[in-house]
Image (cartoon, rainbow, N blue to C red; front, side, top):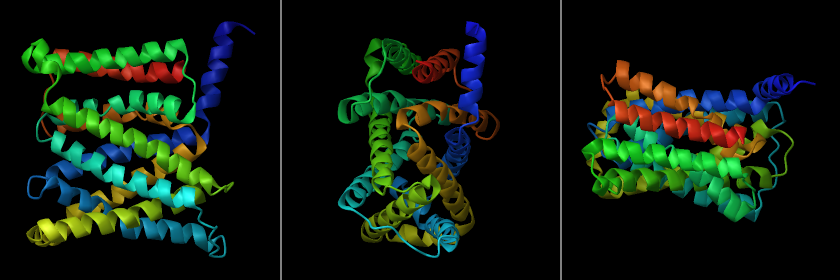
Length: 310
């Protein structure tokens, strides 16, 4: 068979796999949810905006799990130590990552802030190799270097000085990317540890466990340190409900896709989120990234896609 035909057949096979559709759902919903959180952070702290994601998402996660349980005669699997511990750490790391992400948007514009989180792709592949033995080809490592080059361009775009490569935005962005990467790997481990053939059900159980833990943790923190913001959240329940619903829809996509496929591949394809974020930034927040910033974002996306193709 000619090489071109083989490549065409490969891409057709990839595009019809279920994890692809779940990833696309997750990417779009995450962009919409993040935009909603950016609006909320104007009135509440980043931790309270993170609480909104879990508190208002919990009912939707419960309804989704109940819908799946109803067709399975309400039978739950046995939860093992790997599931409980991995889910706990994944939940805490996702809280930290979300707080850093929201805080990042107060320092940089929406499109560029979103691009800093693209380092998650490289970090997921690196950590997957180091902790889970997932081998990466030479082409894959080269793709990672392209991502790093894009990050450098974005940092230079701020002042044009080499000294700007390590600033507060970079710290928040890389920190969030690291936490998101670990979250992805741990939640995949938790979901797979259940040993269920049904990826949707396994992912839903993992999601419900994590969201329940995250709601308790963030609610306790806000009630202790920023109790007045609970009143603000209550008065803004409509946008909060929107954030909760889109957050769960995105999480359902991510969790199911990562149960079906390696986290690095899922996160790479999920870069479609970048396009959605850029459209939101331009048409909703009226932001205009510079040419150098756009070039950097393009390099990061190309590098991330290169990891999948490698």
